[in-house]
Length: 420
Image (cartoon, rainbow, N blue to C red):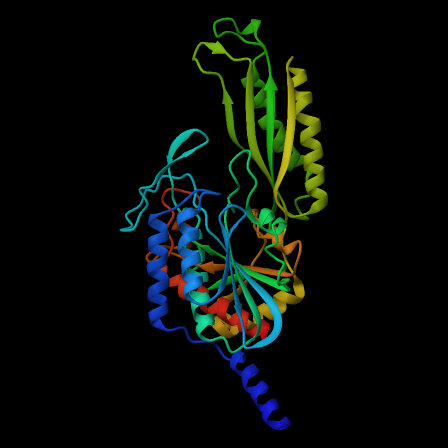
């Protein structure tokens, strides 16, 4: 009897040690789901149709499903045939306020209001592929559940950031118990990349994506007629000088041989008429860092520099800085295990170690609580070189459907190896 039990255990473990084959019929479903989601993108905290689609799919697979977490988040619980660890798999669901400009037959024509303005809505970062991939992983594991433990499927809203005045994203999911009941032991996530060849994945132990902060600088001057600038304190001129000054924090204060860092001003608003120098201007931007000490230095210098520059020109400036994402940190021990699984799933030549990038991910909020591993999946469009691939967050963004099956293979292998 003891030998029989031991043999069964060994067979179960061996089952996870070989590469998992994904049926072509499931790949076709994943592609169809992706096209449907791509045609119906929804902004952060407004992913109502996407959440409904995901929840219906998970329920049809027989899972225990929770909805309405962090506004529109969905969680599905899949239990294996034996007790064991709890592994979470995460996909983000939100689109962006970008008007799509490509020739895809399933391109988005959706319009919505964003910050009071009408805009097109588009999956310009690949979150549609993430949802479809994880739906495919859920279906495969539900039909092949001879594993120990539990898989928690987390479909997350608002990765791109909640609307002003609202809470959302991974941090709110954590606050509302996404990693509890049952308590998660580890979490995996992926992000498709438009410039990485299909079939490849890229990873890095420790810090892989930057911490991100959103800053707002409100500049106050004195209004005057545009024909008499000497009667004004021009907030636009002050804002321009602040932009230049901020870049010296990177070029002269930051130890760039240690890690990379970025300060970018993405928005400046001032005035409403061509011949009036306005009273005020507002600057909004982002800070990206890969080192905690450098982050604190940059934040301190912005608080010091902006008011002093404004004062030098006769105005004033108030700085506000809010963290939007912590450092995306891949647990070294979990990374070592995960890379072995990726090698089995995709072949070691397709599993490539990368350098850190200054993009940010709120997946980091999960990693602050439990060990996590996050990697990039190849999605380079057919006929393009990596240099020609449209950037994420642009109207021309496109990724290859063929990349998704490799995402399903990777996540299935990662799951079974970790749990067994």
